[in-house]
Image (cartoon, rainbow, N blue to C red; front, top):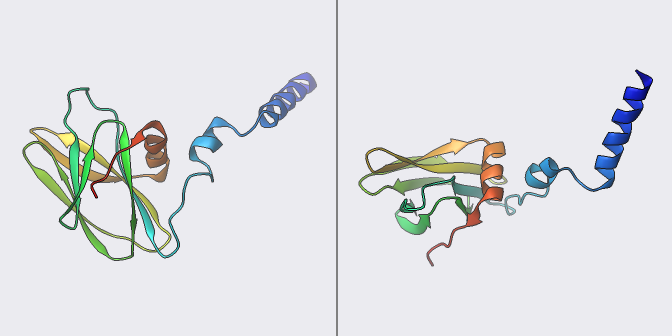
Length: 141
């Protein structure tokens, strides 16, 4: 029993000595927080087929751009009510959100049959994972 405890303690120490764990690097305190007085809203999209069209996003009727598979956008928003829409090839879905200063929220864009797209709020754990696995999508000027 003592040998097991010694081996377990040495394994933990050797893991800590080599740097931060992969979990801390991906999901820990190094993830960018909201700017002072603003909220950080991440719009993410997970894996999609290679031929899948991007999901176009608007914020209060202003076009932001499209989200291809494995991509994300970060919006720095002042606290208020927003109308966010995801556009599929045939239909769109509206999501009304309110943000508070200091918040970091994640919304995933997904496609639905037939040709619709929608946004749904996901947990910070899921959102950070998708951001870290994807690439930042270009936003329209």
